[in-house]
Length: 188
Image (cartoon, rainbow, N blue to C red):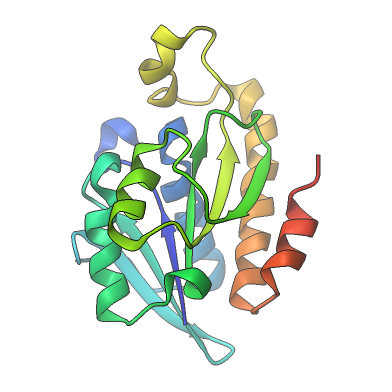
């Protein structure tokens, strides 16, 4: 079983913003794999499907970013998910260059409030898929930056990243060993 969580904020005003890349990638992955529509449950939007004998659950917490762990822990407990081997979180990362992807197992929240919330409920041991959104020109602009939308020029780097992460999620579903996934997708 796999629980794949995309982080973001609910509401039209946040759609397609940098902070919502987790939601957007999950939507594209769900479409690609033929999942049913997301339904409201566990303080989130959830859908599931069996792929090659493996149950795959997709979750988009609707608690707002800072409380993402509230939704994730409910699903993890209900389905008896082992976070260390069955939980994958897809989210935005300002510390990564725009369009870059980094896969990591465990560690700190790195300043990301959604990850901080999940760690507070489930501990640090889970797979993280960080999606580089770049940085604001100065720190005072961080909030407006993450809640902003990608420009046309930025989308030229972001769209291939989305494709790469969807391929990475295929590897996760196919039970590719995490060290092999890291070698494949953590290229400089």
